Length: 361
Image (cartoon, rainbow, N blue to C red):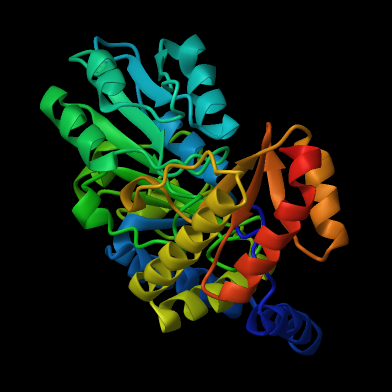
């Protein structure tokens, strides 16, 4: 139950790693395959986000995607504010704070006592000076989902762009970018997309691509990667202008296999399954008198159920001794579900927590 940290290794993904080794030994300089695998990841990721492949870049990480967007923005103007939230993974906060030396002004929307961030917090911060609202879809610490449609409405009313970090949701819930109406989306492949570390993605709205020239770049960002042109920077007309150097080839093999599995099952089906499992888990926690800190409402949670503990690291270790793999952040142990989890998995977790309740609640 650790997909929010590192998804379980599927047989097909393991086989993809082995296939890379076989190709490497048999062919050696299989450059064409490298390019093909990178493109396959881009095509499949576009299907999952329900966007055009021309709007997708394959990156080394979510951090790489955010950094290349930051490098393309100018803060030496009236619109110099970046709005983030207290729910952000460190990367999404640190990168924007790093832009302060370039003139950015970063402000935070704070969480309320119930662990959620009310929309009013964003309404008070988003104004005509806001260039970007950069927020997470699901909080990595407590599993709470932000009101993305509400935030987008506020940003649009003031002329601001929206960047969505969906690392803790994509693959486990349907992330329909067109419906969400965001401008940028970042994430990675090692969690609910069932791939591996060291590879991510960046979506950029088609209309924005020609207006943004990243200074964080490389030869795979050029209009013709085979030109080997050192006389100028000639960015690709598509979102691949936000890529950088040689792609993470081994990781492309694994990521392609993971994405194919998600597409075969279907994100709508996966989301429904996970909603059932998380609800069962939260009901079980209520029954043993150890309620989750994750919001109970279906629309306000993702695939994570967070359980507050006196010593979250010790509880993690105790669960591991029973063969239950979870993770923790701050005071919360995180059970993060995927479609391959079962009702029996949930019941096993609840039984273990019932045994540890007196010690750790």
